[in-house]
Length: 213
Length: 213
DNA sequence: TAGATTGTTAATCGATTAACAATC
DNA sequence: TAGATTGTTAATCGATTAACAATC
Image (cartoon, rainbow over all chains, first blue to last red):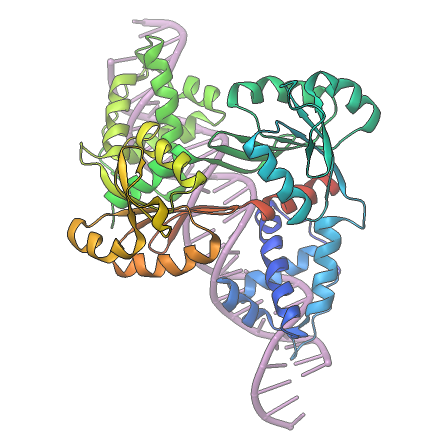
């Protein structure tokens, strides 16, 4: 309660999971939960739950009772989504993948606001995607100079992704969600929050299956 | 060389990256590489490279010289792909995503062999996907009883994924690659090799961006 | 009061990094 | 021989788990 203990990356990565689970408790009308119960449901330990909660703020746990679901949710919402100020986000690449992801950003995720979408194909320019007009990629610099987006979601072929991400860093973009073929990464200057290479994962799985205990 | 030291999951997850990088060295005609150089190129430390190599077998490093690229590659290939016996794999769900992934399994990844594909839609049954005839999902049990696949790749909606994965465990499937909407996971009984929830990752990224140093 | 559960400190565990003798 | 680099042991670092007094 008095040691704010900045949250480490492993802790941060668990927060959305707490958030989703607590939301489901709230829907079921449950007001209070102990670290032991929460841990059992989420497949972790009560110790870890309490340590995690120590990092995120004033959780107001009550000995003998547990934690207030509502209080936890409001703390997690503040951390994960900020207080109303959604992160201005642009989409690069409006093909099949781009269309699917744009819908995802605007519906299933809070905390982000799609403010523009870009594509190389002139034939796509002017069309709508999730309520946004597609612009030509050449407008990227002028648009960013004016609107200062914070996050870019890349849905372009791998080669294109490398070229464009350099430009985006120069333009002051801080966060990246990169879908290039079967390489997924979420990053932030110098910190890779998540990184999955589909081929690599399949190779690792193969290794495990062949070399079982 | 004399301590085989079973590879831990973090080590296993790095092996495909070594493999891919060593392949590119081989293409450039480079025969030998030191742990220091390899580490620099891959963004890790020479210590870690040497520790990792200690776990994977007889790497035959030569003091003063470095490691043989060819030797490392043959060791890694043996571990990651087995010795010719590709893992028999089935695909569940032959929609857009299933089609894309089936092509990926058969072309970009070694070590797997697609032996069947299943779908719920009668209209899809009999069509071809990456050279395999689509079967109806009702044939799953009889097919598995006869052919004993080891890996299942799920490309179905999330609800369907939960139902079918129970059936698959009962049928003796050991490895899973699960694409259900924006939830990706690669798992193996009791071990999650990789697990990414798109929404969760975006939330974590938002946290980092809002709470920078 | 008695039972349950928190907050927090200490112990454990495992992975990464450093160090260095051996040796090509 | 001299410089470079391995193999391996020891040190460090960080995250997870255990323990327990405080207290609802």
